[in-house]
Length: 118
Length: 111
Image 1: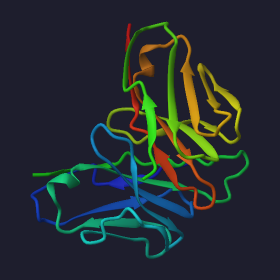
Image 2 (image 1 turned 90 degrees about the vertical axis):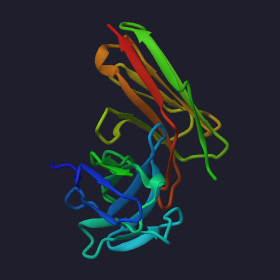
Image 3 (image 1 turned 45 degrees about the vertical axis):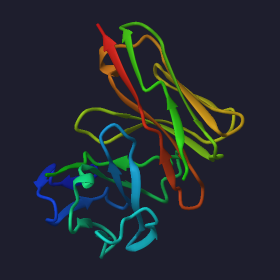
């Protein structure tokens, strides 16, 4: 089974520029998550999709961050304009609702996109 | 907001030693998860715990779901160099499966 694909792996931008990240979840996984992981910290949820609908975006800084999952498969996360404190690894994860045998409530993460804002 | 306290922050051990790390929370969780993250990669699920008191093993790894549902621990026996990485605990609520991660325990193993 192919894993969660993310691109690009690395991105360096200047503050106030815009940037977009792409995620292709595991085939058939209905739930998709975007996490932000700042250096030295654990992942923090930004947004959760169920198919193409938003389930939880309470921690997404909506003045600058946006995300979409138009056809319930791929997703993009955008930052505009970027700030220095947005430097982090952005992780995409997916999970299948029907994956209950064996029970597995854990996510499968991609390798992430490392963003550096200078 | 919700917070998990994971300790220790880092550990430096000799190959062959046993390791223990834990996670506590002020919130009650329905599921506890333990992940390992290596440099340049996303976290990988090691063990999932689904009910209070549950003790689960995965090879040299053993994890327990605390009786109060507010804590969990992970033990690694007979550590080897490839155990090096960051270990994260995560507490999960039911419903939307919202998951909160700890700050991680950085494990260094000296051969």
